[in-house]
Image (cartoon, rainbow, N blue to C red; front, top):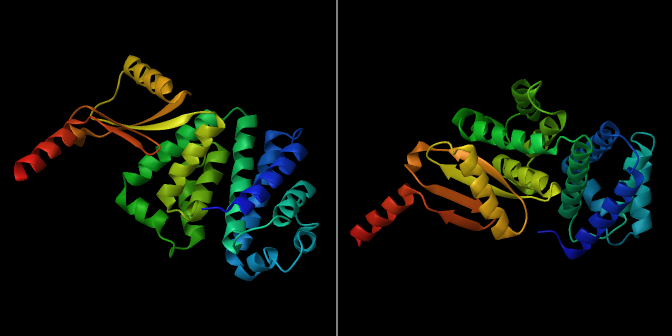
Length: 273
């Protein structure tokens, strides 16, 4: 979990980046996001650099100057300024800098999708890809294997998604391959779906049903959940005949399981006592 000082550093960098990119196009913002994420990749590969850029014995200005000396002329001025603001802050540990850089780049990527009007599609594409992965044991193992060459996993994702998903979706899946925030691949995808929904001011409800809901049933469920949580809710529906009937809904830490399978399992446990 990020410390309060690292959250403060990230907030300042985010404010700087938002101000500096207020008038750029969606494509230009996506390029900046990609540059920030490339620096996150560098930090991931270089533990000594992470330590140098979070060294409490150096002043924030010294750490920012070190970063500028490494990146000036190689990345855009907007990217360098945002990252200099970030490393000029304080961090509880070197790993927090990596997490904050990933988060800064990912938020910028989502902002580019928002600017292009693509967030709803990106959210759905991420969720559907997660379903494809979880439905294929071989694919899940391949994409989740940190020992497999990253280039091979990226190529596999590109083959699966290129031309079928938004460019931002593809880049976010690549972020998930790196283990966003130290999570597993599937955990990263789930978190990215939720971040995309949050950017649209929505909660995500993961719904499991035995057979597809009708449009009116979906609308009624979404309306009830929106009333319950006080904000729009985005339904992510998984049709799984094994639950037999009923509905299971998970929103954050809240689980409402009204499936026939759950009731049968409870009855079985009761008889076993």
